[in-house]
Image (tube, rainbow, N blue to C red; front, side):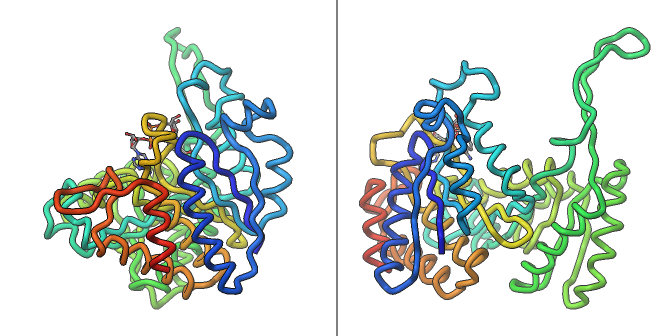
Length: 354
Ligand code: NAD
């Protein structure tokens, strides 16, 4: 298992160090893991003049999986767009063809009070949002600003999905649903958008290959409402890039803290990039107070999806759960009566629990 490790910027180095400790435990148990480090984002720009340098590109191309911390920071905000840390992230996703973005939204019983919704609405919540990541209105051409026929200036984008793009992400969705409760809801805007009508037609066609799966369709405006009204009705949600961007952020807040949320971005062969859903948190960087659990849980996703080691994924998730049961909390998930710990102490506790 060749893993490229890209700590990135801000809290990236601190949280990735904790995830690396977890991988070291598995290595000492006999798992054949190779970790190789490279730079991405602002750290890469500082050292190599490019947010996604060739050294990093070569390493991630040769690796089986990539573990990423986060990129970005206020010191890079005035750089030309091509040199910004976030460009490193977009380029790596594109270079690796990572079209399937998986974001589980799971409410741990110990953290149920951290949610902004009522206890009974989120208790036991376990949703998987699958967002298509390399198509849709974010990449469609043409786009830009122009002067219209009437002489007024206007901005425009193009929403477009090819049949093959929809089919491949739908297959990922159905396969995930097969391993869960065999229920999938495809979210679109088929009452208004031609792209969505086509999306619905293709997803329905792919569904014929998965007769065991109960497929439903929902309009995105209703889905946004249902996620806060009765989120437990969902299991797997399949959706396009722009709708998934918005719905996955909405779903993440059902769980209480962004510091708990892992993510996986996969290519057609289950090679993947694994990272926490949050950013580089410059406001708390270098203070050893960040929550490393989203990054550690991203390692669990890596073992599940790229290395097909469900046993080890569950072992890590179980270790995280145990630490929460013991009452250990970083600042973002702290509540009265619990024991506040820092980033590295939380990592050590997970290692001990493993
Ligand atoms: P952020 O996610 O970095 O931080 C939002 C808030 O959540 C902050 O108050 C932060 O302290 C807190 N937070 C985030 N992760 C935490 C953790 N693990 N433990 C405890 N608290 C945590 O978002 P932002 O402030 O909007 O962005 C900061 C930088 O990160 C920007 O440069 C942005 O572009 C970048 N960013 C990167 C990614 C990525 O690398 N995938 C994603 C989002 C934002």
